[in-house]
Amino acid sequence: MERTKQKSETSRQTLSKTAQSKTAASKSAKPQSKSPPTASKPPRSQTRTASTQPKTDAFALLKDDHKKVKKLYKEFEGLKDREDSDEKKIELVKQLCQEVTIHAQIEEEIFYPAARQALGDEDTLDEADIEHASVKALVSQLERMEPRDNHFDAIVKVLYEYVDHHVQEEEGTMFPMIKKAKVDTKSLGEQIMRRKEQLMVDMEAPAPERKRSVPSEEGARSAHR
Ligand SMILES: [Fe+2]
Ligand SMILES: [Fe+2]
Image (cartoon, rainbow, N blue to C red; front, side, top):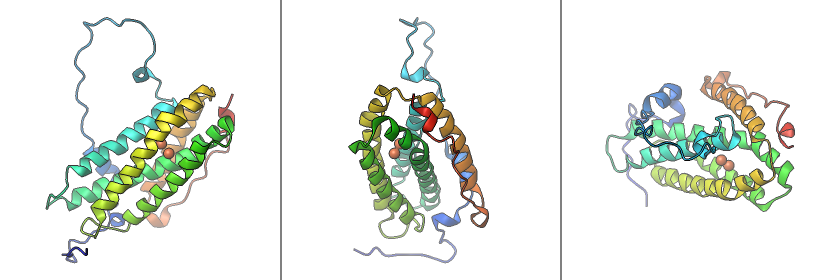
């Protein structure tokens, strides 16, 4: 059912018009709470755990992105039904869309090709391609909308549900297969970090000056041992 729109010219502000995402991102990030001291508990062993994985590891970097998207969505969800939350919703959804877009591009340019090289034509990779396409279609829709538009909240919710399902497939199925295939995820992680920096710069440039940077030729070819 059509929802009544109460748009005034002064308050209308689409996602695409809110440009200062970089500062918004840093401002909205909550400071991390301090972990309780653990010094009194001596480690049982020196075995490396997931939390001590080097930050250049592709799995760790991609999982960090996944967590970031979840955190942004949960923050958005907390604003549900709040009358004065339009500005904050715009900011959060813009960040969410940027994170999802850059993450998907990095996977498509670097991570998935390396995975295909290692695993061959796996169903899980084909499905991931289709899931990315669905997510990107919703992102594109949201980028032309504002919070008072019909179905805005519903589209954000469905976008997150798609992303959440996709993340479960990646972390639960795809990553273990890639790990088993002994892909050099440290080398991939270094490529991912460099490409992400490029894409962030591209995305923050004013639209008329924005140019698509070209991914490194090095690509994923060197990642598979
Ligand atoms: Fe993905
Ligand atoms: Fe991912």
